[in-house]
Image (tube, rainbow, N blue to C red; front, top):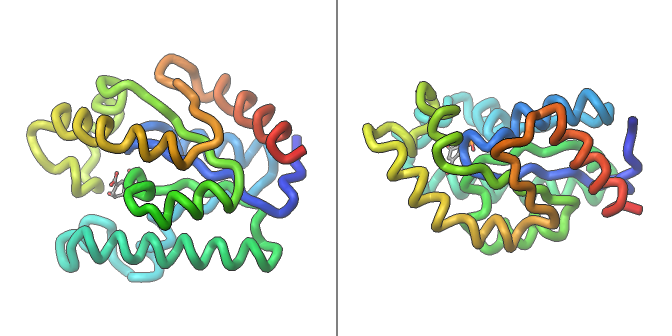
Amino acid sequence: MPIDTKGRPIILIGLMGSGKTTIGKELSKMTGMKLIDMDSIIEEQIGKSIPEIFREKGEKHFRALETALLRYIEASINEGKGSVIISTGGGVVLKPENREILRRMGFTVWFNVEVPVLLERTSRSQNRPLLQSPDKFEILTRLNKERAPLYEESAHLKLDSTYISVQDTVPLIHEAALKFFS
Ligand code: S3P
């Protein structure tokens, strides 16, 4: 079921473990739109994993790479290559410039998921430098509090998706995107 997005992307935002990649893959299957994952692109371009980039260059450097990539994606959309699904990293909303790009570039969906579920989904993750600490619950609670207003500001649609399955979430996004782009 393709969507005419007028050459613009559907962008998925939310905390680590909120389902951006999983839902992005299913939405990609349903719509035939290509899925691009910002973290994977950064890893490929730099030739290092996200934990290596954080360890060797620091978070600030990673954030600069993230913004540069977002600018590049927006420029390529303006060249007609924008009918894609973009899975972002959870911290993409930290910079005001990024939030502006997210709002104007396409249809942005925020997966708002409760912390205990985020914790369960990320508990065994080795590739999230911000969660390499025994007190993951505390970290996720703090990030959730700090970032909720930033996700709110960046998104066109907030989905409280804690108790909604992937199979049920995808049609909701599909329907909302059809309306948004009509
Ligand atoms: C981050 C989330 C990660 C990744 C990096 C920082 C964050 O992406 O970009 O570890 O600040 O929330 P996911 O949300 O895909 O795990």
